[in-house]
Structures are given as structure tokens and as C-alpha cells.
Image (cartoon, rainbow, N blue to C red; front, side):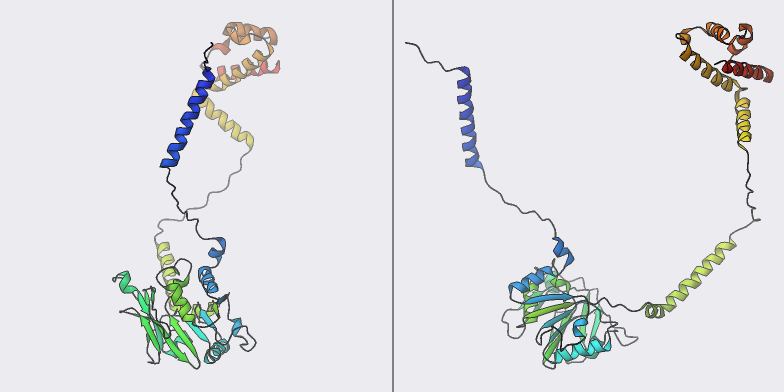
Length: 385
């Protein structure tokens, strides 16, 4: 009876399948899935709109959010899309705002609207004003601060609004603070060391002044209770607006304001120019006259320089190399001939006696006449090529 003997290929196949099976079993017994997230940065929409996260948060809480780059909404409040009980966040300086726009805003707030103003203009004791009519009329003063020694917990303000049981922890920018000098503020909030939010009853509406709007930007709204603070500030309203104005002071007003600095800078510049001219000593150097030379003068000057350097040896050698190169092209094996044989070949082609050509073998020129004779011989040879 013939015994069954598997082939070598079958044995290798079986072994391979067993190894693969063991590897798969080991993989599933030891493999542990690990998940990780990779930050690709802000989306293009988020880069264009720094308050996109706040907008999406309010939308999820059934509050509409709309942004505008000017104050045209207040041109005619009666026909405007602004609701009577909406909240409007003013994220810019009000310097340069027209009195008509300012009165329309105040009238709208008196009827039940809520204005949230960002304090931007520092109070000036000399002029007793901050150039922000809203802040001056409310009695609000905005100051800069170097309050940096406290911990983050000490710099975090805790705010509790009427009607809300849960308080909000907010980390305002501590480089500034505000002060109520009128005594009319209905609500004051901030840290132990500084006031950072003031709220005033204004007719049937409210006016709120804060030191920081960046808490609602994409990179900070998820910190602490910034998002909840935003919704509590809006209250039971159904729409919020963000207005930022691009109106800037005129160039003339800025020039008048900075006139002393301009005058001082101009005088300092004139003094620097005056003293720099005093440092020049000695007679004034006359300008060099422009000299025009013909091309042959340049060639002659270059030739004389080369001749004085080695008595014309280099010039002759360069001319002879040109001749040898030409003869190598016309006569096969010319380059392998000895110098005397090359002269014999040249003599045969040009008809010049070999004795007349022998001075070309001398590498040095003993005199100016010898150089001239060599140059003439080279010219005669080149005429026959």
C-alpha cells in the first residue's frame, strides 16, 4: 500500500496558514483600540466670525443672533427690524457717533430694550471725560489696571441675576475695570478687587456696561460659565444683535489732538538735520567729469597693459594657440607633431620660409621689436587660413 506523502509546497502552505492563524488570534487577544482627537484649528467660517460659537449656542437655546457692522438699524427705529425687547451688544467705541443715532438708541432702550455696551474709552481726569457720551451720561468711568498678582480664582467674578438660582462664574479681562460715580447702578458685579459689570434701569429697559466682550468669542466662550452668563444677560428675549461700528475720528481731529507731538517731532527733525550738516569739514569735493572714450582707446590701453606685464608673451601665446587649433582642424595628427614639425607644416601651407618662423618657438620676447615681428608673422599665418 502506497503511503501518502504531502508535497513540499503543501507543507509550506499549511505552516503559513498556521502562522497566520496564530498571528490573528494574538492580534485580537492583545489589540486595544485607542481613540484620539486631532485639532485642525478653526474652520473658515469661525475665522471670519469670532462669535460663531456664541451664535450657535444661542440658536440651540431658541435665541436668534445677528451681527451688523454699523448703526444703521437705529436710523429709523420705528421701521427697523429690532424688536422692542431684544438685546443689542455694542462691540466698539462710540466716539464719532452722531447725536441722532445716540438719541435713537436711548429712546429704544427706554421702551424696553437692553443695551450691552463695551467700555472702551479710558476716563481722562484732565478733561473730566472719556469721550464716550454714553459712559459720561451714566456716570461710568473706565480705567486701565495692572491687576496681575492675584490667582485665577481670585480674578474670577461670580454673578447672580434676579430670577436665576444658579450663579455664573466669569473670567473678565483684569487689565481694566469700571466705576459707578452716579450711584444709580441697579446691579454691580466683579471680583473682590474691581467692578467689571454695571447695570442700570433705563425707563422700561436696561443698559449694561462690561469691560470685556472677548469672553464670548470662539476661544473663550467654553471657559467657566461664559455661555450661561450670555444667556442670562439676554434673559427672556428671543433675539440678540451684535453691532460693531467702523466710524473713526477724522484725520483733522486726530491731527489737532496730537498737534504738540507733531510740532515737537518736526523741531527735533530740523535740529538733527542742522547738526548733521555741521559735521562736514573740509572743502567741497567737485564732481568728477564724465569722460567718454572710444572703443579702440580701451583696446589699446588693455594691450599695453598686457604687454607691460610679461612683454607680450601671453599675447603671442594666445595667438599661436588659435593658429594651432585651426591647423588641428584642417590637418589630422597635427597636435601630435613636435614644435619644429608643426612649423614645417605651417611653412608648407603658408609658403613662409621655416627660418622666418623659428622665432615663434622662443617663448620670451627679448625686445619690443621681437614682439612686433612675432605679431606680424602670426598675422601672415592667419591670412592663409
